[in-house]
Length: 456
Ligand code: PLP
Image (cartoon, rainbow, N blue to C red):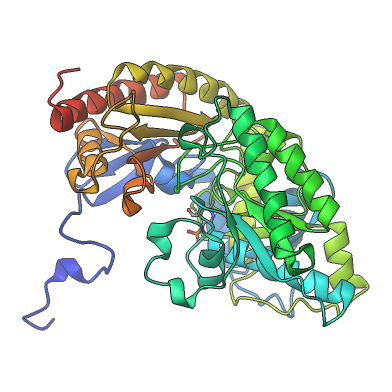
């Protein structure tokens, strides 16, 4: 190593504000740091490690799969685990979403959905089809690659890359706490947000729109925000009326995180395409998928060209498919969906009690996917200045209590308050939820002291 290279900076991601110790190992909901401390992983990494860390059954299975066959290319071969994983994901997916295009992560999944929507209309209507734009929402996150980022409506994530992004139309989010319409109920906000879709379609011309993409429960952009059921019913009807595909981004919310197989199941709606990743392989391997309905598959693959003009080297990777299949089997066998539902209901009920702390502006979420928004003043909803670094102080206080939260997107653009995502593994026990709540409450109390000088 040359003398002028500091070894700690070889990993590009770390900077001088790095709060975290090196991790030695993980077991269940816990991470064990080099500092000798045990941390409760209250965010599953980034809503990924859904069945907890250090699962021996997965480790054993992975070893066997690698010994059998670790890699084949999807353009030439198939392997039993690829077929079985696709069948399992189809079984989990709602309605006739029966066709699974495997990828390696969330951005690839949403980007694939976007391209699939475009090719569907070309195969159906001919090369002259003008349907290519994807409507999405402000305060959303659909990934970091340029297509996914074009759909993303998080100003902080977009700011450097704006000139490189496709000019996709954006409409307001169903963000009730700071809704732009002055609505008093979540239902009213949801109706306004759905009507905004129809207005945008009329403005752009339905002939130019291929799809509308939405998260069912928002992840890192404004953690835990979700609509009323009426939103998805209206959005489904609007998409049908104007011949527009409905893409639901379940990258974070899917595979049991909210207590249902997919979060869109809470809203009794069947989209045309689901993009998913994260909990699908629970972090044991990179994995993702774009799942489409019979109509899209048949139009492209049976009646059409039979060639989706797309593909990544690691798509349909047998190791990832095998691990994902195993993860879904474990979730089913161990009733983790029921656990997520039960612990999630308890968790959300307890989080509501945190309003007694003056920095808590909004508590929201579904199942084990919750968000807390911090404010300077509960009555006016005034956010903290970005320079006050509330999120950073809260994170440090959580780590001191042995709790790992996930920083939300709020303060990155300074538009609204700091927020945080709480999403522990879906196999968390009641005792572990209680432990999380105790540590969280202490960290919030300390943060109140740090930023408001209030002993809460
Ligand atoms: N979509 C949503 C809703 C997400 O939460 C994320 C990541 O957090 C992505 C897409 C991008 O996924 P990835 O980071 O795996 O590319």
